Amino acid sequence: MALGILSLFAIGSTIISIVGILALYLLKEKRKGILYFLTIWGVILAGIKATSLPSNYISSQIIAWGIGALSIIGVLLYMTAKSEKQLTVSYALVTISVVANLINLFFM
Image 1 (spheres, rainbow, N blue to C red):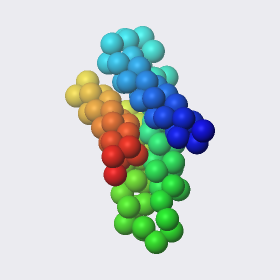
Image 2 (cartoon, rainbow, N blue to C red):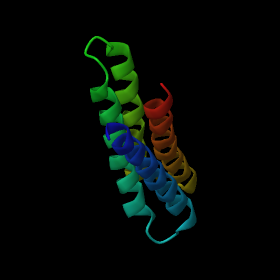
Image 3 (tube, rainbow, N blue to C red):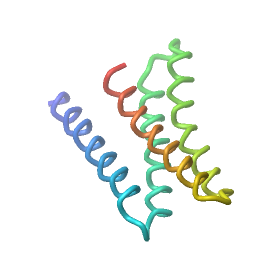
Image 4 (spheres, rainbow, N blue to C red):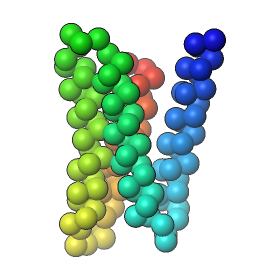
């Protein structure tokens, strides 16, 4: 029973991440909302990973929170962006954060 719920969580979080990332790059008019959603999603995934570890795995917890912090850095860069290149970098940081969180959550 518990493994079934865990597999549903894995499939659901992967689908949400893939759809969110595709929407971020394919949709032109609602990028701001999608970017904020993916930022929150990246921090949630980082929190799940960090809190699922034992309390003596401090270095792994710091890595998990650091990956989540990439999303926050991406949004801060988005808010202060003055050129299209900075916007692209902010989208890339949020994307890297979500993908790295998924990889970290499922394979490490």
